[in-house]
Image: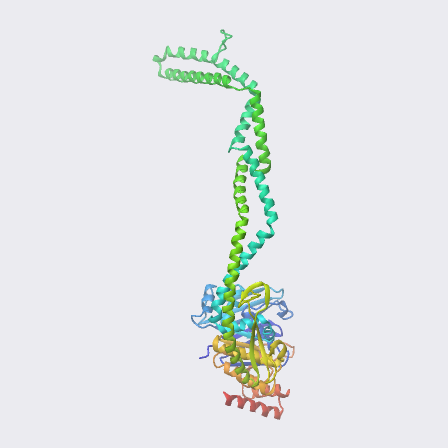
Length: 580
């Protein structure tokens, strides 16, 4: 059962298209029109809807922005639905509404199911929903990395499972190698850092500072530096409170307070208020006595020894030397020492760490060798089946004697890993270089498709590969932009036939200039410009009956009213219907 994914697109101010709606249907849809009419804009529009790169050059001259809107029906329960819901999108009767806006300045915005989303979300949906192929994809197939990726995709879990394990080990090996290189290449810097730390820690250890010692010494230095003034002040204050033994006639505060207290005590029984005052004055007398005693003790204990002051200042100088280098105060110096000790242990452990990393690296390289061999074996097995399947498809694409094969090889590299007794280069996808070879006819040597395939042959190889994928790893919609480039005659008929076959299990949209291909389509859309060179709503229309014959005639002979071309067009349509 065919699942329709792409229902319609509205395109505004994109290239030559002013405002047009492209209505699609299940099965095979061919998009045709004069050169430059804007057929390729259909592919470009879908590419934008599915996360393709935005380019300000796409915006129609004079417009502020280009807008592409699409309605896509997604298979229920698929990962595309889950990803869309994670992004906050809402389905509209089982369909996703997608919008992409590109401003004339090149800025791009994307909306999915009524929610603004990153463009990357649209690209994630594309992986499950649509396979887009154009001329650039043909060139991409020439890259060895793309050929290896195609083989891995065909192999499925047989390669995917060992490749996942290999990739994990490869990432770990890279991390180990980077750390090992950093330690070894920075050995001199690290040795210099360790020497600096040792010097600082020895300097701090020699002084042996204590937390808060700098504050205590500052206070003591202040006291010792003013010992005479402090002693004199304490003596005078003591005399004022308790009297001076050398001046028995002198009046002191304690004597006066005591006299006041005796006077009140004599009459306190007569008035409670006065008794309370007597108690308070008694308390003052006690406080004065205590203060006087403390002053006497302070004066006796005060050390005015200049030797002690010199020792304090020397100690403070030693601490200051540390705080200038290692911290704002003694606490900061001690914190630096703690951190420095930990760092020194780490640096001193480099030799041991180098041994550990070297052992792990060698072990991982050995494991990778075994994993790479498993990947090679899996790819070799899948390559035989894949090549046979593509060769069979080419026979149906007017290349009956062509033969496709794969060359799976490794390159010797003294710095690589050991695979099957050889030391070979390796990368994140294994040690294999995978190259697709084509022998176009018997007796011809199998050559890389980049060298041995013409443009038409390359188009057919790509189509054959996609048809094979459709049977093993299908997507709901395929869109081909002139996949028939460089092809004509019988080969074009066969391409149309294969596309029609593919459309029995998927939605297929083809931009084509070949009538032999368009004749096999279930629906044909014509893109045509107005007199002012733009494509409007009326410029994209479904061709049926006589209109379709006229368009096929134009494509055949460049003349819509040529009787010969019309007869040929009708013959193509009849043959396609009979084939279906």
